Length: 485
Image (cartoon, rainbow, N blue to C red):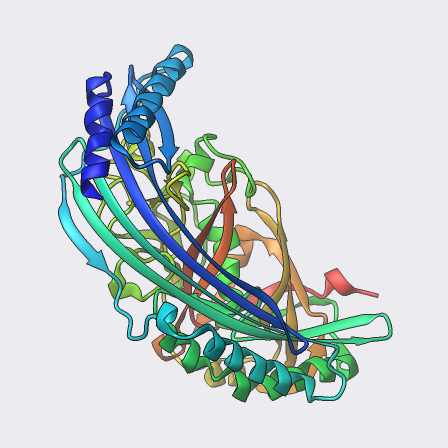
């Protein structure tokens, strides 16, 4: 595979490219799901091809192919150079890349059980057991389960001398119980909503969830929500469990720090950003206890944003994003780092597949833990609302005004959870919200969540990101408006 990538960059250089990098990607994916005792999805796919980026005449060109003969690869590289030269006719200035030392290395995330070696029948049996356990609870209308696995092997070569081989194994699973009653729909998910939990691990991750064991509780809570009190409306103290907080980080920190959005180079799906350049190292993003990093290193955890090297050959690194409340860093590429005068890329460029142009994507954008447990957090709250498991979200195209709803909540009075609440929601302004944070639980409650379905780009690229968080508390938050009656 290295020979294929080398052929591509050598052809590009002969055609006039001053820089080129090529990725050969071999991707295998498996998806399974059930719905009310029946198999809903059973899909396995493989994809193998090459993508090449070049700079010629000071502009970018990109092309891809699944015809991996010498002729097919050479034609693809020639096409990328031709595209770059055509693009140069409309360029404002030459592309400049921040310097990066060449790397020769191999990297693979650790895992115990290869999910593709587990029989599909065994995996379906596990899902159907959880499905059946949910349906046995009276009042459950719809039981759904899912698993997803992805193995990505990549060979990267650049004209600067890098040769990098990486293998990433991703696994994930989840269950959902939905209950219809009258004109109301309630649901509960485990271990998280929208596909469950996903990380860079093997099948051992799925086994650790004990889906069938948690299914009765999930189903019972979905039914019980119909009888729960409506979440009150007003300005209250808000406590978020780590899963919901992970999505809050994704939407109100992760997307606005993407430097291509800030510079107006990318605006699809998530819009642009309020974090314009003059705010770097001057904006009070959050309270002094708020510390956020973008960390792609395995030491941070096996997140969907974990890797050895990004798709520009930049080693995984940790970038401080918010430091004691101050905005201190962006997610950057070699090109965007050079544009704002940074000495090196943040190492955040990735492409969904061989036929997609790599772009800035979130790595593991995580809120660092504070101290104490969730029990301590509740006990120290006199009057508040605890919310967990995302149900829906909305945020403007500059990532500033937002509204979230969750599947379930509990009212807190006198330091105790006193009653279940349904249809909870909260809204706010990004910087006001993070500045209202006055407590974050400790490392014993910190968890690295996976978001497998982050969309960006045109044509769309769906990538996985990671978000670590411990439960946290926010004061004076607007609550309950989304479902007010």
